[in-house]
Length: 247
Ligand code: ADP
Ligand code: MG
Image (tube, rainbow, N blue to C red):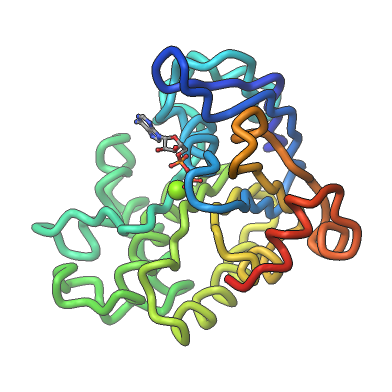
């Protein structure tokens, strides 16, 4: 079971700066959920809370049937892919992908099996001996995704993984992410983006977060639904305005 449930989640940075307000949300087993909204609305913060990288909040987060509020990031069976790839510059592609498994004391032949399998899925087998600086942006992002795959997580978390790529590559990698989802049907995915086209293309469910002038709503859920529901039946002016605006 990899259903994720957030109940009454609030977070502030400092005493007077709420960034996440009253979030109640369920992400079903194997669902592809996109956190969407303008810059600063709290998408990354909410994702990092699921990953265990932000603590100090009120409310409750469950992954599967486990309450994880006090569970360390490494024990949550989630893997996160960052916008800036976060590769280790002094390690080969192979070692970057193996690093987390070595930390977890996985057997050497099992590490090799998983790294090679992930490299095959991502078509980066010829790159395993290279250093990150010898890779293109798209290749680096594949390695970052590979590093998540080898951990066989129950939940994949993506924070704007494509926003450093040029437009053509972004469209290509978008379909690779959709393929990744099909390859791991049991894993749930949460994908953060400010790009509504990306959200429409990938999501089973979109969670649109409020931002803007109305500070009392900032960081709360504006609408949750299937992409076409939001598009055709926006619940309020913020949703209609955001989806109607050019990316
Ligand atoms: P998004 O990912 O949607 O662009 P973030 O989750 O990064 O938004 O940030 C939400 C709000 O919280 C922003 O106003 C941001 O400036 C603020 N914020 C994020 N991280 C911190 C932090 N570590 N300390 C203080 N404020 C932060
Ligand atoms: Mg962000």
